[in-house]
Length: 178
Image (cartoon, rainbow, N blue to C red; front, top):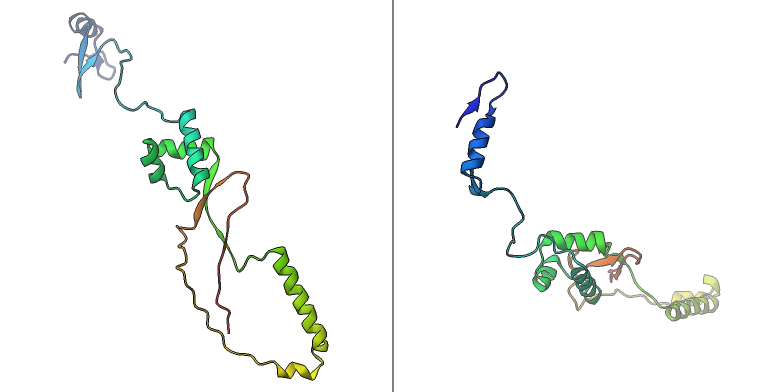
């Protein structure tokens, strides 16, 4: 190759450029092979450069609403779009975040709470707020708690939560301390 030596950093001479343009006006040789010249848009086969379209956004929304434990891989297998597009759809378009459920010791309904309050008031009345000798007739025993289920791991308890929804909760049956 011919470079112009005029005191500036090495660069192609304008004459060399003109010769190359006239002789090889259709294809130039680049590092990775022939380059189409002049540059223009060509049809490309394969997936479009972006998969973030309204139909995919709606499909992801439906999948998340159907199953809050859905993973990126399951969405990818179902829709055939890449992980980056899924991330963009979930976080930028749907404003959905994956959160771990917050643990709660128990979850009582209003009726159950009222029954407990009623029973405690009856016991206070029956034992005269602890001043009655009948309180010594109460027999206590040791309890054994046996669980018949496998608790979920932290990863298994994560769910997708939309922006305006409350954070998820999970009831945990704890063994009482002695």
